[in-house]
Amino acid sequence: MWKRKKNSATPARRLPLELCDLCARTFPEHEAVSGYVPDSSSADPRNDWFDGLRRITACSDAHFQMVRDRYRHRPYVEEELWAAKITRALTSGTPVRTLAQLSCRTGLHEPEIRRAVAWHNAHRRRQPQT
Image 1: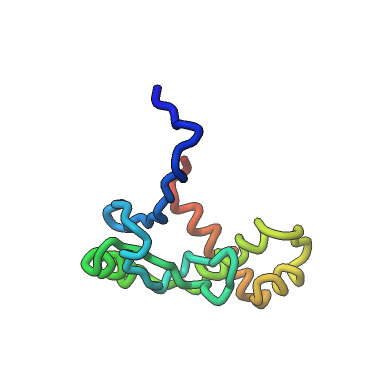
Image 2 (image 1 turned 90 degrees about the horizontal axis):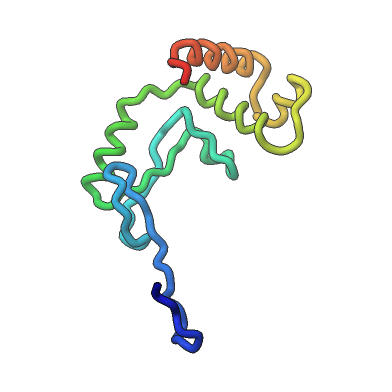
């Protein structure tokens, strides 16, 4: 077994790494090609300004273009975004007890909430259960 000497020099500094969204290769953070693409399934956990946008990271310009093209062909569904916002509100912070509280937390009106719930329920029925 290898052991570090007690009086050894300072330990090696860890280099921040990124992961390519296409090929899963790891590479240094400073080499990353990244940006945002429209994605109605994405609700940012910390900043609602980024709701509907997904940050993508790639190891090269070519891989970034390929990932961006995949999202370009994906439909943007408002109800899906609203459902993501509702999920975020229901899974973080204090419990939501009324539709009015949910409306305040998400910024959505009651008809939008109802459409999002209907979309979510229909979408869940189409997905195979695991």
